Length: 113
Image 1: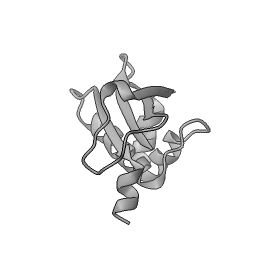
Image 2: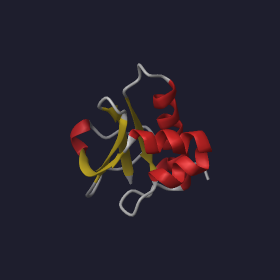
Image 3: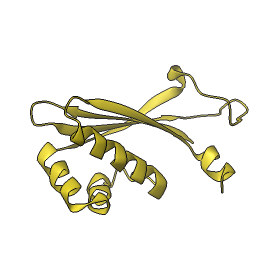
Image 4: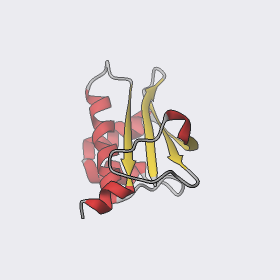
């Protein structure tokens, strides 16, 4: 499955918003080089977090942050969760950064195993 996460700090309290998108349905023949277009992605879910909760989790370490980011509705796999946490940490370290995007393809994960 191909997924994309849009991660942003929003508002004056720097609340965190993670939006998950995925390519759903039958895909064309998959290769490592093929990339879906923007229109192929469908919005799946949005999770909102209070900025102060995220800042506390970051101060306790990456494992705490991952535990905070994972919810009943948003539960990324291990490698994906680490990359999302890294981006969140980066967004909160650099005040001028307001958002970022990560893309994942399960096909690539299995190809490198």
